[in-house]
Image (tube, rainbow, N blue to C red):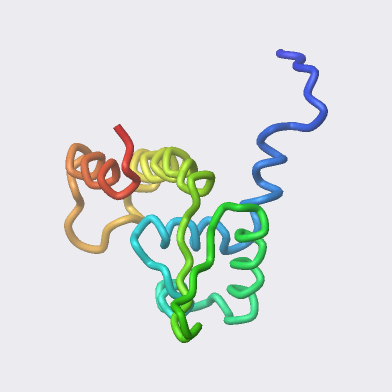
Length: 128
């Protein structure tokens, strides 16, 4: 057993910023090139507009995402900041964990081979 003199557990601190319901899904969607409010709602049918607006504000406040508008404020987009993009490795590892552990839940008909899955995941999450 390790005894590390942390003031707070680093995992608990990170989860306090990104662990609220829907936050990871929003971050994942941004890695899949989603950037608009309606896109997040479409990808997550059970997510409400109210909760989405709250999560986007929180993620922006914590500098995980940034909000941009065009000149006349008709188009609002959200993008990962450098800090937010650093979660790519976390999401990649979660995807691999799911493939290794819950494969039967991932695909409806035809499974990707492990090599294909890893290759696709590396491209999506932009890891080595």
